[in-house]
Length: 193
Image (cartoon, rainbow, N blue to C red; front, side):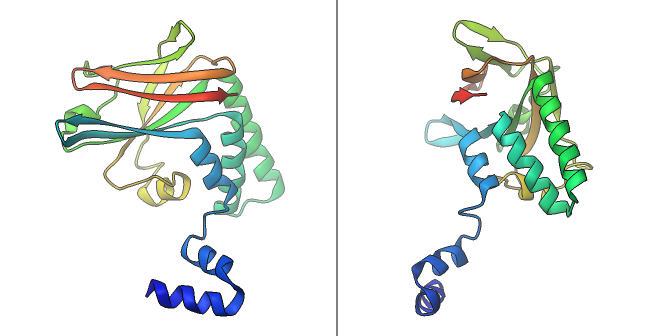
């Protein structure tokens, strides 16, 4: 089937159309922003995967791309899109948010809530470690699977999503560390703004 699609597209307008037919989001600016600002990591027990995690830091560029995507998905007019962008930029000034998606066969280790003692979460810049000011799960009522899939290209239905908020972080390198009895995962961004 793929070969047929490629052959038809190649006949019509060359390999570029075939490429976009198979991967329509490849040139999407929002998907590119998600790739730029998302990192993945895993914990292993021998050869078995214990936990997979993806972290997306809401940098200013990501928030700008998100506002545009949100406006396109929901068919907003220019004034509504401008309000979404304004709200995103105000949120950026108020704090640094990281969306973390975790998946595991073991339910207890996917719980990042502050009242569980499984994990310690820090954002590290140089030799300064910042503790979260808020950790909360994304509520399914506000973020059903279809919406998660529209806004997080790495989405799978087995993930639990959390928003982790820190005081506003300085521009520059940021390392998010999540560590506990199950192990440690780290996510690095070199040019956070």
